[in-house]
Image 1 (cartoon, rainbow, N blue to C red):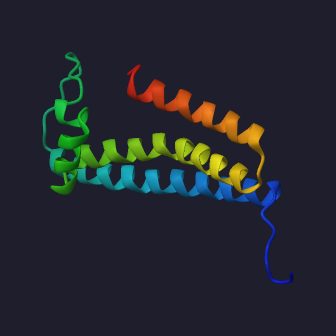
Image 2: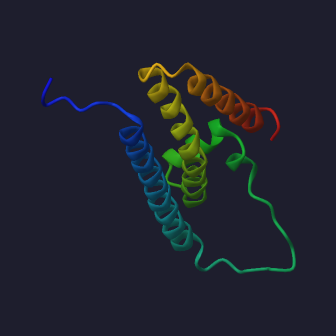
Length: 127
């Protein structure tokens, strides 16, 4: 069959590399836009470096985060960019599961699923 590209390890590595590059670039752009909006909105705010103030509660809860994200809040956009950066390697592992399944490589599918489960448990239950 000419014209069809075979899905092999080399092609899978190429796609995974592109996925990581795209994820990091997208997260970087989102954080940059959020940072610009945050500085624009808070440029005149006085700074006090003697007191540590943690991030607001709305940045720690996804439902509230997306509400502020839709409103164009710079801090929420930065937080969303960080979430995109965290999601990028998770997407890579999901792609690895799919790629190895296409190759019918059961051992690597099992290893990738195990890695994905460890990532999800550590993100959802240990944080």
